[in-house]
Image 1 (cartoon, helix red, strand yellow):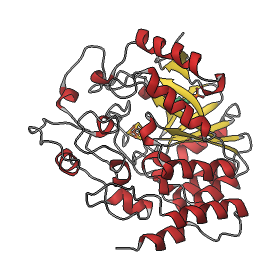
Image 2 (cartoon, helix red, strand yellow):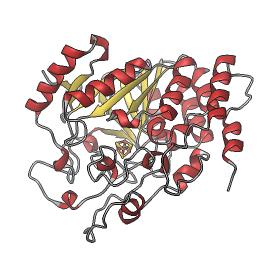
Image 3 (tube, protein in one colour):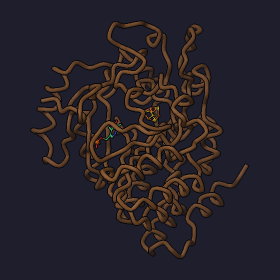
Image 4 (cartoon, protein in one colour):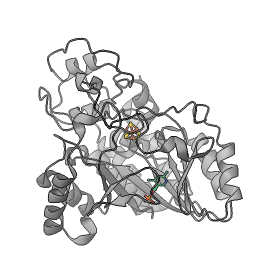
Length: 367
Ligand SMILES: *Cc1c(COP(=O)(O)O)cnc(C)c1O
Ligand code: SF4
């Protein structure tokens, strides 16, 4: 096993390409070993390199229940979206609380097996928008590359839980057709790296992909959609930040946090590393029953974000994917919550409440 502080130090690379403020922030993070939460008395593994964190993630609901001191559940039927939860995320879950808002996002339950009318395997029409292997082109000017099928956590409500990543050409991470598509369409000035989670790619692969986008003259912006800074925050290394900061493309990072408990110091420190190097960070959340479907929670989330210079971007109405019906919040309830958000927060701290409908030219704002 590696010594945590060795890995952390490696993390704060002495790359001369980094500005001194980034290097300094990285060193501060390295010195505080900020991933070992206090008061967690289970055998929490020491903080390690993000790839090790991926490898040692908990992959069974029985283990997750045991670690969090929850009663075992009867054998679940055939749930086709496996459990996958890194320790860094488990550390933020309250032991013994079956209703913990982070636990509910990651623990499979029998409710996923209930068939509900209107909930389907491709709720947002992604398969119709697959323009080239691993590329979705739904909206004017921006193309979304499914950089990989892998994620740093498996969110039970995920709209891509049923997505056939291998058929979409992303399993082998061959982006050639996607890059070719973007090269041929001069209207595309923004490339979005999504997935799955693009920050599960190792730096060399990610660099290859970003470099191939940078070579297309009409592309001006790169957007990275990732939940990694929230679930395995040490993925945001000084090397990664340095690579993004030196890009010719205006680079935006969209993270994904649904609940204020997800935002501990380890996560906020990594957001700061990105922002201090000039990379704007936005957040998108999904409105989820029993998790963040009350104004108080979402106000707390948005306030924490803007206090740390992250702008709330979208609040998504749940996509109606099979197995996620129990997470749905009605639009009426969503609107009531949004009214309270607008009353409590500065305008820039209020996300846009949107739904995604197949065939629409943009994500549709809900009044
Ligand atoms: C959500 C999404 C985008 C980005 O939409 P914005 O409103 O610009 O955030 C682009 N392409 C696809 C396929 C999407 O699903
Ligand atoms: S990280 Fe994103 S793509 Fe991956 S399972 Fe969670 S919501 Fe889905």
